[in-house]
Amino acid sequence: MRLENLTTAHEDADAIYKTDISDARWIAYDIPGNIGWMTYLAVLAKMIKDRKYGGAAVSAAPAVLMIAGVAELISERIEGLDRDLPKKRLYRGFGALTLGGITGVASAVVANTDKMTKSIMGGGALLCAVFAGRLFRGYRIAEGSRKGENFQNQDIV
Image: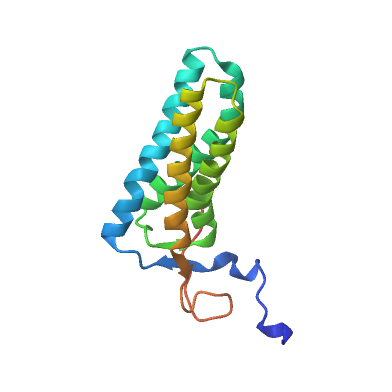
């Protein structure tokens, strides 16, 4: 294997990722994913309201990841970058949302609360992780978007 053919993470940092997921499939993944993170956050808010601070403290970090991912996805939508995303934005949006869902499932298991709350919270986190992950996995590096190739990248904020 020749060294000049190897790409590093740094070289692909400016790559543009595209998805060819159909609109129908996008909506089919988007709705349950949204229900998932909203359910997780609603149960977390209820835990805080009910003064179950131990369970809420464990569940706060996944909630922050979910909120950060959703905020990034909203900003991408506003800028019209739904299907063509720079690598950084892809990971800040779908990556954070998927990771928030995965860690949310784990935090729901260890949270110091009743089984029903754990089940609802874990189910919401699982929906978020699975369906955000399905959208995340649908993105591929676009032809001509690697460093050194003739492709004009968009500015990354």
